[in-house]
Length: 146
Picture 1 (cartoon, one colour):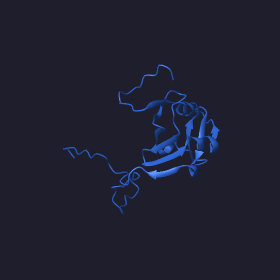
Picture 2: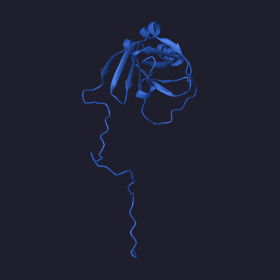
Picture 3: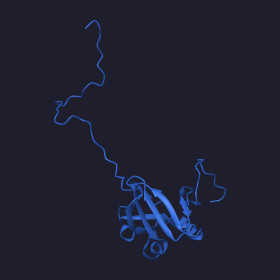
């Protein structure tokens, strides 16, 4: 994208990549196009990861031979050769521009770090307590005359 000015002043390494829509899409560092995603960006049907076709071409022109995608929520890093993305991938457009997806079976996946674990939520609610169907008061107001 011409004359694009990043919104943040973060130090960028490598050659920054931008999608068809002008959004930051990672950077080409050495022979790898590295980008971060969150779980909700993964395709469910079929289970796959996808990238913008225009950005894929630009990454290849910048010297990328590998696509490395890190899920920042789970810590899992997916790695595939761009030739694999081209040979075994599929193109589609679901309203975000032309994209090329690659089924998860074609990716090498590994945890980024042994210490990284998926987010887990533990409730602090008391177990076994029944409230008889009435809403508990959030604040109790006591008046002096009552």
